Amino acid sequence: MTFQVSNHIGTHLDCPYHFDQKGLKITDYAPDFWFCRKISLVEVPDTDMLIDLEKYKSQISPNSELVLVKTGFCYKRDQEVYWSANPGIASNSADFLRKHCPDVKFLGMDLISLTSYVNREEGKKAHQAFLKNADKPILIVEDMDLRGLLSSPKEVLISPLRITDADGGPVTVFSWDK
Image (tube, rainbow, N blue to C red; front, side, top):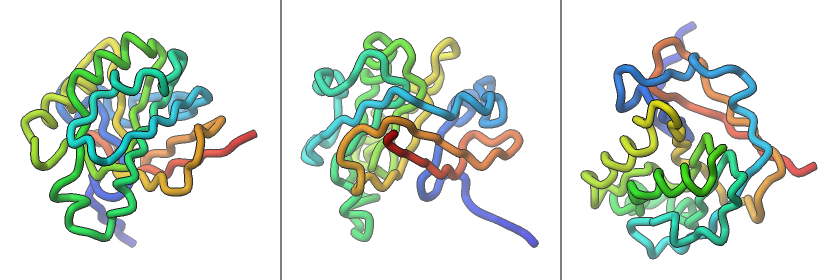
């Protein structure tokens, strides 16, 4: 039996190796790394084409390990606009999150990519800003379906397909409230 899939399709993770040949890969992280107990859900109107997370500081707890950005854009998953005119995350948001949330490990979003396809250069800068910081990379979980998420979950497990030398890959994300 053979299983073949692109590593950046559907809900997936970008690791530092995605933009840095010396960066960490999925298999470089210990199993407990993927478990988060401090989560912030940031509600962002999908009218912001370039999302500066500092603008939403009041919605982000300083002890967050995972910041989820819910734009509502996931309601457009079956439309061309979802991949051709999606919002993106501003590159300066990486430094803001590192300063505001010293324990942040992940940024997840209901966008097909951190990169807005109408502003690809800023998207490249954003990927590098989040992933290339050797001391404190923030892994990116893209293309999440957050329609059913009404509040910050109590716990989240990000379960990647652990492939040797992968710069990212498909993930299943489990969340629950205790």
